Image 1 (tube, rainbow, N blue to C red):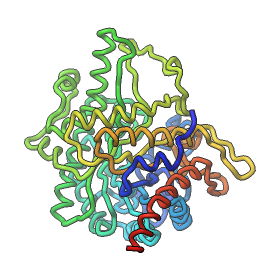
Image 2 (cartoon, one colour; image 1 turned 180 degrees about the vertical axis):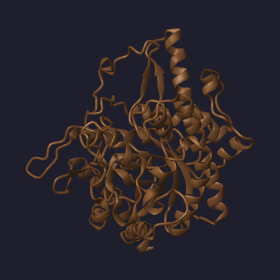
Image 3 (spheres, rainbow, N blue to C red; image 1 turned 180 degrees about the horizontal axis):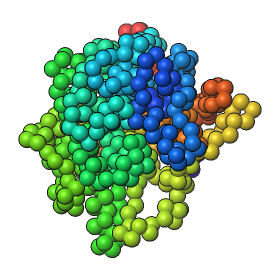
Image 4 (spheres, rainbow, N blue to C red; image 1 turned 135 degrees about the vertical axis):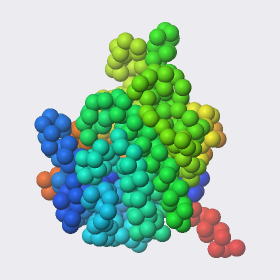
Length: 457
């Protein structure tokens, strides 16, 4: 598999299409207790024995909190339009309610202003999983009060930087927070209750809808939306039990989030499956959740193939696998985007995360990551395929800008298009970053002839 030609691929996108890179606060900032920051649930989870594969934590990570200027210069050098980052809730409001931390807010002031000075549009995420531990001590997302604390937090951040950011995402991947955090226990806060997970999922969606209403009432001019991790889900065989299992898994991971957001209802088959574990709702909750959005963010990494027996082995597909053991399946992104456009009245959509972990080697100052380069190129082509079939696509962002703390995998898995030497914090552009930069330069070359023609006229 080879990468498509830069120019021919770029010509498949409109000139106002947004190209970017993405990160999250806990994964890159470090400075875990600096300048008044409070602990998050991930600070706590990292101290649990066996929770993180390499027994590491995010206390230093990429030290972005201290190196943000150089990192913004690096982003600008790539030639992207946008940078997606998240605000650390416990950095700006250590207890998750009440007093604000001025030094934490000032950091994001500097970051936003620094992006604008470099001609890069800020795309801000409010919740990328690092809930203040103080709120978790009060029950976290399982408690309805956290919904209202999140709305207050959203309003406070928007008062500070909402006049300067292009877009605000409420939550990143609520499925991960709910299921991996509260049902399987693989992620923070590390709980094991399906009922708690489903209640948390409902509260995340409710807080999203109420936050959108509050931000608009406050006069926030940023575009508002949510980001979901979604995949096409199919059966391993045509057997009736495999087909039924795939339908259920689609309900739990796709329709459970898309249906309330765009249809104002939870899928009935999933509610019946959950039984007593279904969440408790109050009057008007679903109406609030379905508050119209300005955009929908989609994170895509691979497809899901489901067997009722759980016996399907991804290695049997014959496709390449990433270092996470995920199948490389770019056509699944086209399939997913077409399905969302067909089944829901979606607003403009962005791919807010797409990328891959591979075993990288820094040799003579270079990282030759051909597999990642091809992964990104072919997924960009998959977006172009969806766009050509009428799907309202508005942007694409690579995950991730930097190698970083990869949650329960620690520092062993590298998703970045920029290599980070964690001992020295030295950043090195991988070949994938160079490819992306060259790809974006072809867009500039496209614009030059029309600009010259305009000047002549």
